[in-house]
Length: 415
Image (cartoon, rainbow, N blue to C red; front, top):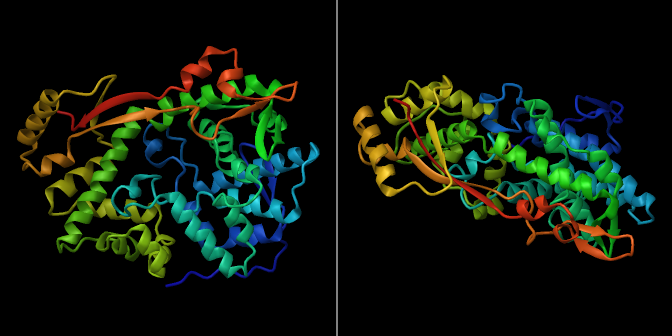
């Protein structure tokens, strides 16, 4: 079933009352029309932070909140760059606003959980690209510039960097917004000042030298938010439980078992969906557009009563927040330790050798707040030189923060 956009003849210059930034206006009619489209409205039904509400109860904001906020910051960035003498045409402004508005439209329910098994070999960025391409066809090519900017094929490189880089409007919004809704104040950044310090040099986005301390705080905030929120050990434990619930359900369905699921979820459990399928089969994108948090939660609530012991136990624990214990270590867990835990859990829960894989997980977490080798943040010095952030900073934190930090975890049911 193909979703049809709503026809709305009301005044399209609407205003959102955003709890983070205050009033946000919709700058162009085409943006209103895209927001009204069912593909976009789906983002209201997908939480921004997946399972994080199990740790921070206020973290119930949605992808819709986030992209509206990112669009608002993009409007400010465009105004700042124009003020400094750089040309951004009305068509380019529309394109970059649509690109940031749609940059997360390819996200599935519960953030990245579905990227492990429900779809394979295709990222949410790839799916966002497919959605933008489809929308541009529906809107008679009006999103072609947005697609080009999103895909980094547009000649003005800095426009893509505003959408996706280490200093983009996506990160600016999610740090402020996630900090607000979780109550983790360490994540709050001075986005207004950082945007005011933005400039363009040699076609690339740069930051004026006097903004260096604001950007240092931005990177430190990102590191803290990763360990306190995004990679919080209890959040990780719940997300891995969700991943294994979906993995078990898909395994059962592919082996012929009839499980309760919405039509959209059933489509992804019955089929192996790759990037090629998304490119060549219209059904894949249409079913993905119908998939949201409610499909997954509704199914898991029913699966807790399944006659499959593995699916039932995992689902019941997640529904009732009876989460797995998780141990964190700076070094990998030994095979002896992992096997010891596996044997204990297997005996306690009467599991087979294959079933215990769904209950004991050993993996690693990695946090890289700033990557010197990927789309650097460059500073425009007073003498006109361009210097990469970590080389310009007198703060040793930047050098430390540019090194990836790895932690290892072992997760299993509590006794």
